[in-house]
Amino acid sequence: MLEELRITGLGVIEDTTLPLTGGMNVITGETGAGKTMVVTGLGLLFGGRADAGRVRAEPGRAVVEGRLRLSGRAAETVHARIIDAGGDPDEDGCVLLSRTVTVEGRSRAHVGGRAMPVSMLGEVGEQVVAVHGQSDQLRLLRPAEQRAALDRFAGPEHEKLLDASREAYAQWRRVVDDLADRRRNARERHQESDLLRLGLDEITRVDPQPGEDDELKIEAQRLEHAEGLRTAAQVAHQCVAGGLEATDDTPDASTLLGTARRTLEAQSGTDPVLGELAARLEEAATLVADVSVELSTYLAGLDADPARLQAVYERRAALRALTRKYADDVDGVIAWAERARTRLSDLDTSDELLDELDREASRLAGEVAELAGRLSASRQEAAVRFAEQVTVELAGLAMPHARVEVAVLPRPAGRAEPTLPVNGVEVGVGPDGGDEVELRLLAHPGAPSLPLQRGASGGELSRVMLAIEVVFAGSGGPPTLVFDEVDAGVGGQAAVEIGRRLARLARSHQVLVVTHLPQVAAFADRHLVVAKDTGGAVTTSGVRVVEDTERARELARMLAGLPDSDLGIAHAEELLAVAARERRS
Picture: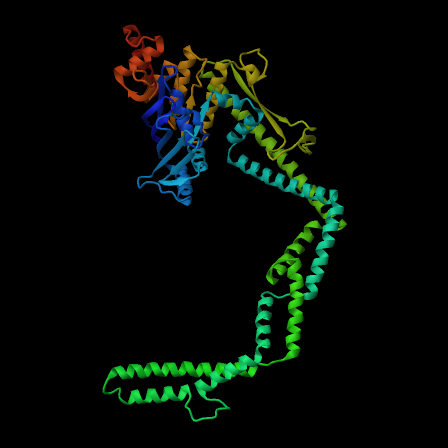
């Protein structure tokens, strides 16, 4: 759950902290006091879009900070993702989140003590919080959102089926698009293929080897300077080990080192230091002997061969011809050839390949259609359960005669989507199958079954939305639910029932409710009031927790606009007592 929320410099809120609790938290206050800024702050904290126009000019930036404590699967998922991104949850399991927005529109995010992309806050938010406001009600009126809602309700097995459908659809479209492109651009593909084959034939004739140009360069230099290299090697060999052409009795390096070693060894008994130096001279003599052998081998292999030098020149010329056309060096030429071979396979427009792709497209089309049929059957089964459960909740929300229906219909063919036969009917198919889902409301017996956008008033739509959320909560979902004035247009007994349902949700979730209804606020486990201060030059708002008498006064204000009315306070206390009994039952 979200244990604490601090907001600084956002709208009318200068600096305030909301201490939140598990269960049901309600936020109330006069119109314009800043309740909306609390929800806006929550949105920012969990990766929502930043509006620089809401940032206070002084201090020029808005900061929203939150302390999140999670448990169970949500904790494992979120903590693992944060640690993978370089963040660090606290030792007690809490995660600190922060979002900063400047008046210029720049935005920064911190998660677990580390700077992160704002998208990381969004990833955490998807696992932790679901925000529902009147805009969410409007979103639920869209067919795609209604289908997504039903898919979410249908359960994990349905989700696996949906994932398989999306993967099969993507494969099918890739093959179909590839086949169409090969047929549509056959001439251009032939022309490109001919050019690539000419290049590959030229490279194949030369047959360059990796690193060959550097090796030939070294060999050419050796052949060009063979006499100078031979003289240098012979002199060096004579100095270290004597040579066949020595003309004087000057001892070589090996002889001198041997004499020095033996002389020191003779005195090592008197002074151990000389013994250590003698051992080092022995090592030097061994190294000189190795160099002598290598010089001898070098001289034996050194040959001023004019024919070989000419062959090296010709080979280097052939390689330069390739590097002028295809790459900067021989390794680049070899890489070009590999890419050309791969590209040739992509450009293939042979009848054999086209027939193979045609068969693969047909196979995948059958798989997509089969999965679409299974998805449709799964949705129809889930639609019955979903409608029944939402209808039961509506009865408890003072809509006892209303009924919700969920229609799962074949998507009409002839739109921009491809069509396939699904269960014997040509339908438009997409990654999510071939269904359209429509939520319908029967407001009372005898009323026609109408789509939500036509059959529900504002108050009814609020209750339908809440009923859907109650049903969703029973099948999991984020641990924190935020409701932003979803009770608009509702009053009387319906308002009491909304409060009761939210309190029931709060048994398994943390619930944050922004409301104008005292009947809803009375069910809160913690009541926070946003109050506006107009005493200074600049209007500011703050949030405080109200309890006991203060809470009754706030409910009296909400009931009649008279926080000091004895009758209003008595009514508020009665409302609180009824809500307390309901919560205990």
